Length: 264
Image 1 (tube, rainbow, N blue to C red):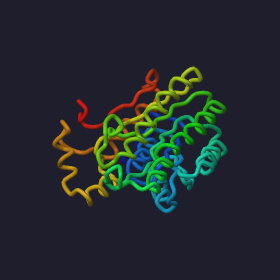
Image 2 (spheres, one colour):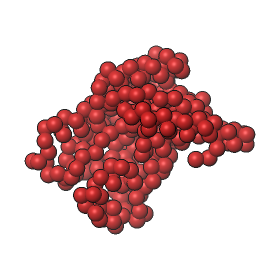
Image 3 (tube, rainbow, N blue to C red):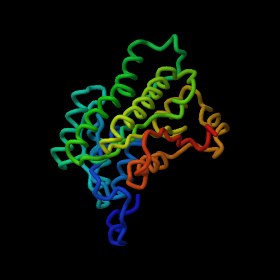
Image 4 (cartoon, rainbow, N blue to C red):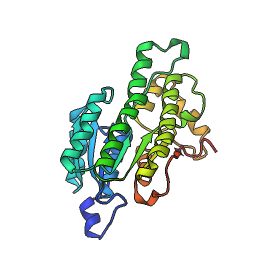
């Protein structure tokens, strides 16, 4: 991560300069990479996740480089916890400008008939309902404070097609796409842009868990990806940052594949 102080000394103006940002699932993986990048690009970032020690570590890394970051411990499976987190950001910063709804959980590869009801409910609670609850709170906060804003939801390239072994995960992500598109239509007149990104194979703990089940899963994915490699979390964060920035001011209702060309 480039020194934020050094960037400022070079008259650097980031694409998220002076934005008040929320990043969920910010303690690791894509969320942590996004929080660091958003701060590097000039935002005041609030990190939200369940694990305080990891949140503190990422926030301290950002502030040590001259960025602005704080954190809130919240459970994305608990609607009241999500709503309280958004309210706390407004109390701390006076407004909310941008939000990256990244938090989500994976699941072991399993045929549809072997998915337990408990696993189904947990995946839906975080990967689908959690996004819906967060969007509701974020949109209200943006309208009532900044008067405008931008939201990016983290979907998956798997949301565009069937997902053998990941049926419930893929279905939840496809639902996120629908929420994204509908919210863009409903709140565009209010000055709120809503988009999603759909990452392909990305080197996070989630894919590492699948490797434990299928050791050659990354190699198989690479063979179907024109760029012949998985993504680094920072590359996914770059797409989210652009969509949240004013450089994407006429972009809304889009689910952007960030997949190395695997859908080409």
